[in-house]
Length: 127
Length: 167
View 1 (cartoon, each protein chain N blue to C red):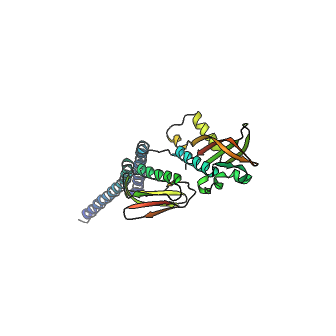
View 2: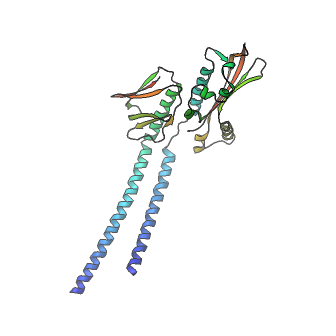
View 3: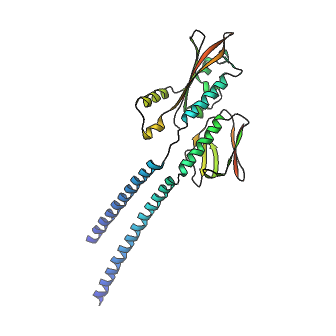
């Protein structure tokens, strides 16, 4: 009886070990694939391209603006919902549909440039 | 003992499988990135805007007063025009002023002239794919301009070359 019990216990232990291993395996593979699909999804829905378009358009507007000019950028934009527009280190950063900008795009201006956020739009002022 | 060795072997096989899955995912992701990313080149537009800005700065009042700009300022013409250092490292600006006889009387410049060499290299060997992003934007302009030098006003020629590098 004791021998049978020990054998049962061993089989159970080995079975549990196999199940645990398979579960860990599936979780890790799942995580890799979720990350992969998230990254691919980002590429396919073109948020990066929309962000690039907005950053470059705004940078060119700032480059060519004369002092006293200002332009409005609606938050609900053709290129998606704009969460944030920031200026820093001579670069413009635009966050579109949850995609925050890491690199930004450089602008050049001889004048002071500021961004003012309002309820439904951003105002970029060149002074 | 044997069971422990078997377990270690299984773990190694599992790591190997995961690495393999990771590599396959990366390769597929790389292919997606190559297909779906799109680079918008605005360097030539930037060069045009900058050339206009520099021309406006030099021809304030419609005349280029060569005496107003010192030798030191001529070597840092972008700084003279009010562009900050952070802006200027991407650019190369070269302006050459000629008198009515076609003699060069002044040169204004700033930036790394090597950008011109890079542009020529890319033009010679046709750039493909990713390389296209690295081609500097270039614009050249020729202005007939009123200039003031040593108290004498004359209509000279100004040749301008502006190169804009990738970020």
